[in-house]
Length: 144
Image 1 (cartoon, rainbow, N blue to C red):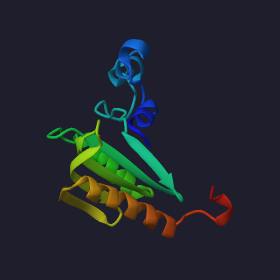
Image 2: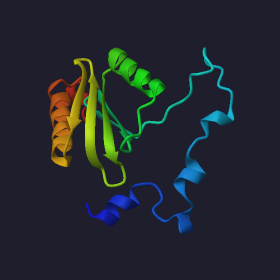
Image 3: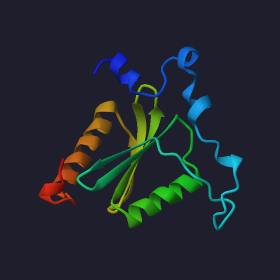
Image 4: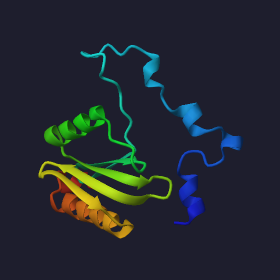
């Protein structure tokens, strides 16, 4: 996929012509009182999610030195504990998808993978995909 094709599938690439996605479409969660059991509970966005054979891979990208806040960390840990989700927390440059560090949250436990290269990151994505297929939660008739 060329850079132009990739960018055309990734929100608005021309803020002047199309308006800036962040200004026009990102939810302002503090605009309403949600009524959850604690005032500290707020909605969270997820950078992306993929489903393969009934398993979920959730990825949250943060810029270098941008921490994962406690609310997101707790949410991801509980999603892994109670669902079929695996979470990759990736620190790096989300615009170029260049990872620097990575941690994995899964039912097998949480692992800090430390420094990681682009190839290492993509290898983990491929390993997860193969695992999801091998451990499919779908019947043959459900596979698309």
